[in-house]
Amino acid sequence: MPDALARARASELDLVEVAPNADPPVARLLDYGKLRYLSSKKERETRKSQKSNELKEVRFRPNIGVHDFDAKLRKVRQFIGNGDKVKLTVRFRGREAVHQEHGLTLLKRVADELKDDIRLEHAPAMEGRAMSMVLIPSPAVATRAERNDNSTATATE
Image (cartoon, rainbow, N blue to C red; front, side):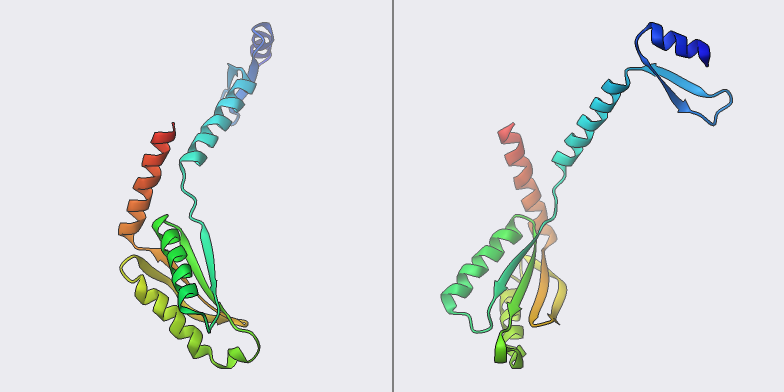
């Protein structure tokens, strides 16, 4: 081991122990700073190629207007089209909480409108004064979104 250390100092490299439990211990001469740089570069590259599944949230009110509903539905469609999970939340204020069936019918209406593009991950459930459910893209929509991401990534490079 002292001979290897002397050799590392002479060549201005680092002595890195690869297998300390082996008999005899295995060490390697290399530039440790360069190794760390290359490994962090590889890690960044793999992180860049990963698609993070974001959870987007769209909030509704129980007595929402027709056009407001349509606008929020368009937003949900856009999120699903991008391959993101969507959490739909209906917030109840005051005495609205007595009529939870309005929130349930609203969430079911959204699910019916998007039934070809989505799968239900969590059914509608009350969480405090809000009712929510989580939708995920159907496999066909998810692969289409992934293909679109890959085509835009290659176009920008």
